[in-house]
Length: 464
Image (cartoon, rainbow, N blue to C red; front, side, top):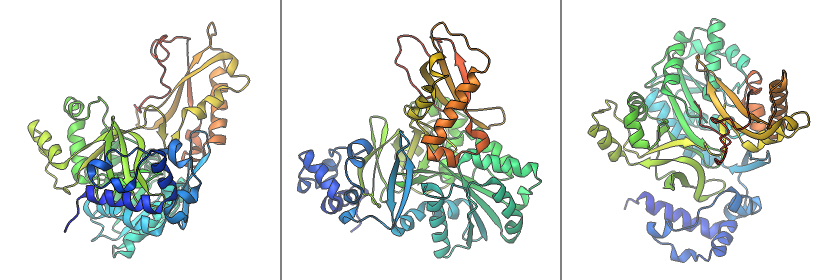
């Protein structure tokens, strides 16, 4: 008998309720008897779990199955800079390898090509680098002719090892955050790296990028934007959740050229990341325009509120919608559902894969020599220039009656930069040093675009 994804996730609930001490307590606090949850309808009524109300309320061992912490821990920065631990096991990485396998096999034909995989994510306690390294090495253990090297996010080391290793392989896959990989490609051009000879492929994660970005980087890397650049959707909380496929990429590129159709499908004028997922591995729900996921792992998660804005589209509904609007993808792909992700635009921005929180910026604006000249209100955003390079930009409201004087913007930028380095370890290690200092724009008090009076202020804006 083949189980449905709904039946599988109910089984995950039952195991979690039986073996995870914190979740048993959580259910009891909400007056829920686990024995009464036996169907998908019952499951959908369970309370959501999140960081404040669940993960930070209980000791780490109680969040793990049978009260035992798994064999490895990754860390992610929280909104105050306090790190959050994420235990995981070899088994977690082996299961997640299916997402990498889908990209390497279907997009890169890595089963037939000798492949050098270059891990360009930060190495250390952070999730991306060692997690990716483990999954790519698992591909080799499954028989793929894949060899891995892990220089991390050290651009000089990446460009040093490539000329030595790349000639021995049929193709090279760079895995890292989108702006960092673009920086590697651009710097390689300047140093005479023969990208065309290396048959470059890219695997990205951590940020939404435009199809214009994909096209530009593909041109500079001499690769095919339709099949050779694939994005993963992952979080520190639950690992890799979904991935781009050649089908999802083609659909996204079709929609990018028809923004009115994209707006009808996604409900917004911005284009989200569009990926496919295995509902048996990661069970998604959409709740009030945000994503909820259930997944087994070092900390089993049942109806975990990721807080990413987005939604779900069944495979057949996606194709029916496209056909009804005269769009006919030529690429065949897995019959898996789609998840689209805008990210947490209300709460954070993502820059080189580092989540940057408004609270980090606030501290920098409260330092002496700065605070007396501004209101403390700001807008944090990531902007792209004409060369599709991204920059961290902060628009700051001047205090009433204050006029910007020479050197004030520099003083604010220096103060925020120092606090970001102090509070946010992901920022310090993910973002290249030359990109870390933010651009600061000073606006008059009550500026109608950024600080309109009488309107609830939003401290972040989506990337543009």
